[in-house]
Length: 278
Image (cartoon, rainbow, N blue to C red; front, side):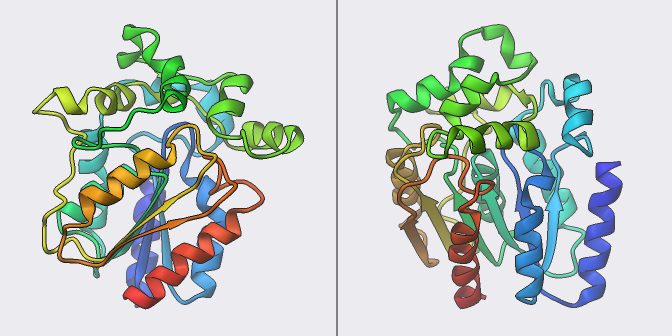
């Protein structure tokens, strides 16, 4: 059903004649996590397209009932799936991604598929060297068991609280966990963790492609999953590209910055960058 919905959104974007903006979610979330962003960008004159990963369920409830659909998905498989969908758009889109979605949009931009890109707290790729303790602790629910590479891994509330919702209140953290959190594929975590020792890794980005287009990295200081050292290193790897490359910190926020009560500030930052880049 999600694939059909993806095609419907693409058809609507093509019919609208507006510049498409493709939103890509990360692990433990679904495309619906971008719904408020989509409304904001539509009001700003864009055609939002909320693309799913392969076999994404339509709802949190369905995802929790059938977690096995997430198992075994790799970074390369997901990137190729998204590239195929983007290729069906009449015009090259802007890309916005969060967490592993932030890595994926950089991969796609490196393939020359984007007019401009916003990577929000992006997961690391080959060449990004910092590995802070907070990031290791956030990924421990997956990396702690090598068998998880082939599994879908759910987060407990306490794990979600640390990895995503550490910078919001307890009440809001519980609301976010119920509303958004789904099982996540274990394989991408292992791919990112081993990217710098695997020359054939799929977790790599062509940062030098002159067709990459403008790129913004958004980071925040309270993020446990992608601490600012990782985002800064991602920016540094991208900064030699001939295209515009910027980094903007949004202070006082955690990894839930795209879905929590402060999402509008982050969305406005992304929207302002795209408005001046397109």
